[in-house]
Image (tube, rainbow, N blue to C red; front, side, top):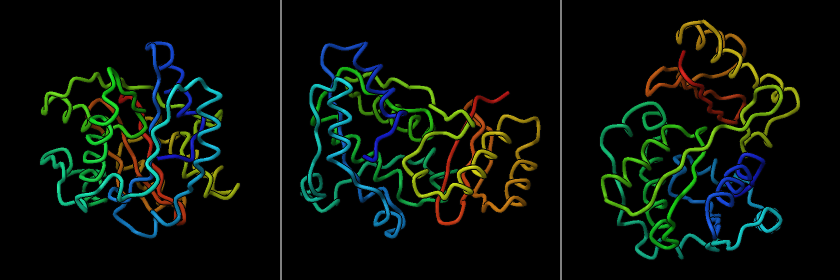
Amino acid sequence: MGALHAGHMQLVKRARAENDVCVATVFVNPTQFNQPSDYEKYKISLKDDAALLESSGVDYLFAPDNPDAMYPDKYEVRVNETAITKELEGAFRPGHFEGVLTVVLKLLNLVQPTRAYFGEKDFQQLLLVRKMVEGLFLPVEIVPCAIVREESGLALSSRNARLSPEQKKQATLIYQLLTSDFSDAEVKAKLDAAGFKTDYVATKWGRRLAAAWLGDVRLIDNVEAK
């Protein structure tokens, strides 16, 4: 999606170590934004991203320059999953995962990698991509990569750039509470009391997951469940 940071570079580092050729794809995919305003605010910095990827040892960059290049069918053909997409992120962002799975399938078909590396911060997305690969018999291994965090515990995200210094400090509360002994309901209540608008806090798939708004920025995070 671009606006690359150290978390993305960890994916690159792992891919470089485990493969002869490393390909990166950068494409701000409009079909996975359930709110058009969020798409309009998303930072696009392809020139900077390309320079960072080159310096990190990426051999090839695949970066479609407009949505029509990826959607010549006008998004009439889509990939839909009917179970995991109904909850958590799927419930709060209708249509999001349909856009994600559709574009990931297109990218995998175009690049045809042996392995594809996905960060665990978008844990539900990772589960769905794996399920799609298995369900459609795609010849690719999906490799999960651990969340990269700042010293404060804040998970790295392109959206963090939209936080003020005060909000960035406040955002560390999500990780602090997810790793606490409070119940999911207690974590949600504490986030709301601290000024967040919390969509959910839930424990499933062996993880404890949360999504919350801080101002007009939506943050997600997860940790291993205790």
